[in-house]
Image: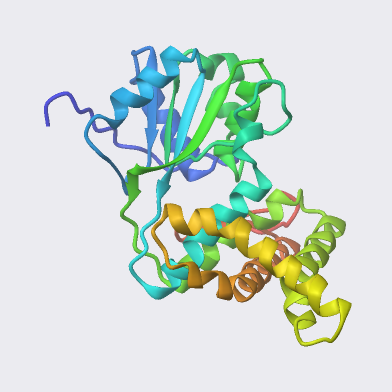
Length: 283
């Protein structure tokens, strides 16, 4: 295809993740002021790239990224993918990430447009070569240079990946314990928070008196916070009824992520395992 250069990649060296090594090899062939990092399963609607470039230049941003609309054909995708975006936004509030000077930095690695010169200024992909959450790590390094970034939701970038329930479980377990900085105390705190927010209020609906009304208020608040995501993805508002169960599934995947780490595995994704350096095991 005219204008397309296909680079035959090599196996990643020790210490590199597969994706970052692929990006590093591709970077050697980039000679433009802007660079687009786009997952192979992401489809952009016509004009989207020009719109992203226009936003980056107009607002003098160093990086813009879009969280692509997930594929939601199978029932587990419809149940779990809106919640994935919901929980991601709880961990990385977009409004704070987009605010200069805040300590929050987020990016959606499936679709990222940035100034090419930002890569050498931040140390390039080599500086984050072993990062599990590479998109947010890159965003944090750019933001640490006092350069503004932006992340948003869209329907103009769509994931075409069809995932089994096991695939979705591995997707969550791949990064969950990393987001908790491999801390048992944070894992326990996360568990307490999930049980308190998503579990106990539902149980409290079966109690009399003040406990019922307090639980009802929490359930209403929880449901209200989830409805905008459901509306954005045109999902039935009745999915809020499943949120406690969905939250329980995400919590279980977080514990799975922790158990894998304690057994020497930092991450597992697309058939490749990344071991802890001190595990004494090989991939």
